[in-house]
Length: 201
Image (cartoon, rainbow, N blue to C red):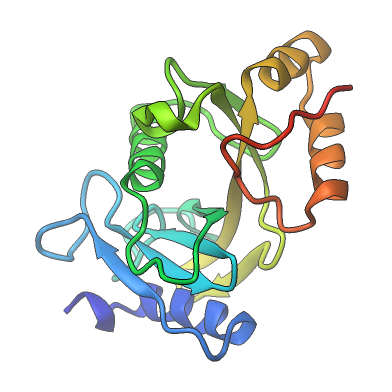
C-alpha cells in the first residue's frame, strides 16, 4: 500500500515533527501507488490560515533504484503554501495542477533548483482568478530544508508565486533573490497569495 512505502513514511515523520497535531490529506495521482513516471501525489496539511502542500514521488519512496547512494531519486520534493479559509476541506485544484506540471517539466529534462524562476504562459494553474500571478521562484523550504532517508538525501524546494511585474524584475536583474528577501520580510512563511500587493525592487 502507498502509506507503507518507507520513503513516504519518512516524509510523514519529518513533517509530523514540525506539525505534530495536524493530519494531512493525501492526494494520490498514481493509480497503483507504486510510482513510475510523474508525480505520485501530494500531502496537504490544513494549517491555520494556509495549506502546506508537500509532493511525494520525485524521490525514491520504495526500493533504491538510482545509482547515486547519497541522494534519493531526484533529490528533492516540492512544497508550496497557499491561503486557506477555516472551513476549507479540499485543496484548490489549481495548486495541484501547478505542482503536477512542474514535476512533469522536471521529468521532461528541465533543470530546476533553488534560485531558479519559471514564467508560466497563463495565471498559475490556469486559474483566471489568479490574475497576473504568472511566475514561480524556487527557494529552500522555510521549515524543512532537507532530511536523510535510507535512500539518500531529500531536499524540500518551496515554490513561491510571483506577479508578472516581479517576474520581469527578476528577469532584468538576473536573480530573484532580492524579491524573495522582500517577500520574506512581508511574510516569513512565503505564502503564494494571488491578488496580493506587488513588491518592487
